Image (cartoon, rainbow, N blue to C red; front, top):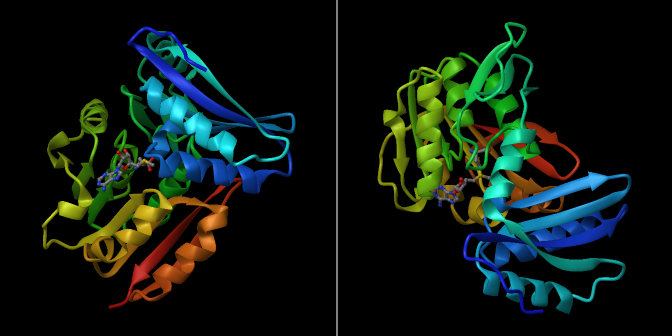
Length: 291
Ligand SMILES: C[S@@+](CC[C@H](N)C(=O)[O-])C[C@H]1O[C@@H](n2cnc3c(N)ncnc32)[C@H](O)[C@@H]1O
């Protein structure tokens, strides 16, 4: 199929699956990741026993190539399609539908374009949601819970792949005195800085960087990394190098299928697993480094 589109459009490549086909949805996600689609551009929607696994792509040719490779899988009872989405409308629509919600035991996420009610428990304001990490995705939610669980047990926090900066803000609220947050994506860095400022926090600890190239001998009391499984495994020793003795390491971005692979890979490190959270599709783990 050749699509005629305007430059500003976005392309949604999606699969429709019925219940009981979760293994297939995970396979489709892996195809998206393997083709270079970042985790924040992949979403799963479920309604009345039907699941839609979508990837949002800005280049038409790439979208067509991914659609073709998905069709080559010849998965039974799964249909694949490509849809053109006018980019601006999509962003506006998403902002319009985004309202305050309960994130963890203590914290609510409150978008700044919604009215703030005093009934909100501890609010975390988001003024920019142009990045992954609104808290609606299971992986972010799990990471937020793990940071909250370690409240007042760490003084410094490293946020690897900060996205909106939500975890860094929670870490600060949970007692961290020092925050160092990095993201490989310029838009995420901009978004995280905006969100830190709107919450009355200094954005000076947010940096544009690829964690694999960060040469920083500092150790942190809590390191958070919500990345794709492949990167968690590839970078595990690098990530661990930032964790202080007896410090915490929280990882997510792990589909349930990949959980055994992560456990095996992290087992060889000088860490002990203290908590595992699993949800419908994703898992997160909290480790503590040996002394
Ligand atoms: C799944 S999002 C997580 C965002 C947020 N921390 C959360 O938990 O919701 C992953 C983020 O990591 C960033 N990222 C991916 N690889 C990275 C790398 N090698 N170094 C730094 N950031 C990276 C992506 O740009 C993205 O913003």
